[in-house]
Image (cartoon, rainbow, N blue to C red; front, side, top):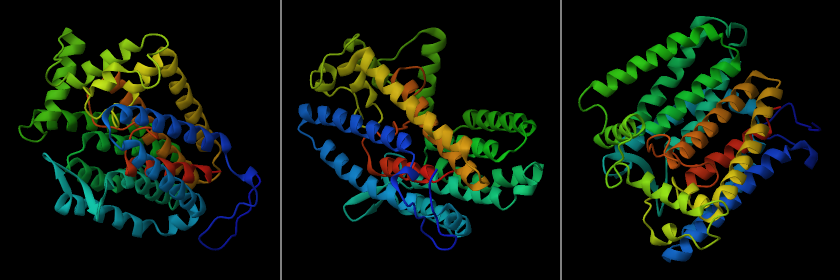
Length: 372
């Protein structure tokens, strides 16, 4: 691509618009616009202001994209130790002084605003992990380098799990493993890692008091449904049951914009955020749902291309890590809404209501655009 960058300094300079990956950028913007309209449809029935806030978040997201697109990855590589300490600091602060909802502590308040540090963590971990491998490029095939990468990520994962936020922890774990793969870590190291993860997960599941009751209830409900066909539409399976009713009522072509009855009834908790796809399924029907999924496919094609074409270790690992975390969110969220998996509280990239999540996505696009 036709780009021109200074060899020194912090900011990347691109001399013309052709230096950007417009397929990547425009597909992300298209998803964001679909999300805003879906949220606006919810507002029309509830006299709420989610769409107005999402418009403000989107405007800030464009600024975040611009900043992340301008700051050189090479500069961030040199700043990685500082960023790693910042990452640990905000996660510790979240546990100690963060705003709690029920038993979870995931938000930090700054004046009238809240932000979720675990979303910022995803961007920072992608950068610091990439910097770790970039400084050990000649040793990437050694087991010690791979174990060091896992140790690099372990404190971050543990602090997010303590919030507790299982979904974000799994997303960060996936980011780490795909980041290692993008760096060129030999595949022979991964089977033992997967065995260890399975063993730790089993130990956590069978240790009393280690996992919150609501997490156990959601997983138990989904196992009962998938294995024995037993649903719990009034208990742990309520959200998914109502979401499936909404999507089913959409049929082939949907009920039409503003005309979703399940949406109008306000019976789906968190519909503007984690369950936003149920609005698309109800009002857009099968065709609308497929179009959105195709749009995600186009976006991820361009993300994959950035990863494949990246010429530096820093670029490959950043692109691989961000591809992993955004794809994980998309697949798990759609599986959750379509009742293929348990409810794990993961938003749909670019579309779910929420500032920090949207800023993370736009920041990711900014970094991806310079991975070449």
